[in-house]
Amino acid sequence: VTFKDVFVLTDGSDTVTYGNFTLPGSLVVNAGSTLIQNSSMTTVITGNLVVEQGGKITHTSNTSSKQYILNLLVLGNFDLQAGSTMTVDGKGYSSSNGPGEGTDESFDGGSGGGHAGKGGSGYSAGGTNYDLYINPTEPGSGGGNGTYISSYAIRYGGAGGGVVLLTVNGTLTLNGLI
Image (cartoon, rainbow, N blue to C red; front, side, top):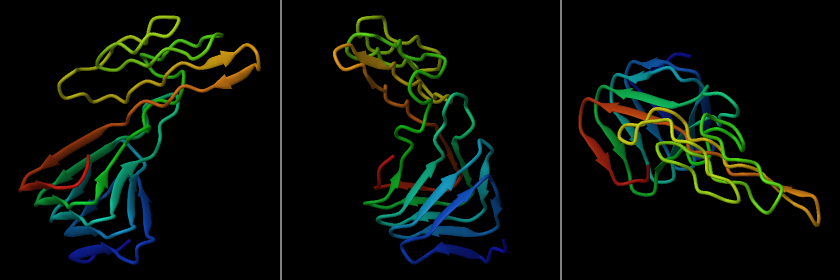
């Protein structure tokens, strides 16, 4: 890929999935476009990063091991505009996975997955805590699964949250959602 001074995701339907890169210039993520990091390595943007209204930055979902995080180093300014998102909701460990995984239960639902704090209890204790409360760097663990005895239906626990590591050397303007 050859980058110009400013690289723009333009038509509202662009999705770029990448491992990591160094972008010698600026990056603009337009409305409807999504930038997905598919590694845990640091991505460097030497210019500015702008995520316009309706633009989105995220990372690939993890399953049973930590493989993906959103790890950005912006040497210029970062402008997350109103209506844009940098979200990793549900991108941590999948259900019943992770260092603080929730407990599977044969009655109702399983317990909650832990992270920087203990997970919520169901019929069993919640998952254990394993990361720092301030400045966490690990994905959240998935909640435990539950089986409803009358129907033998499995209710899968939710996935934990993902990881955002963001370093901005210039000005951070945060009007969007993280």
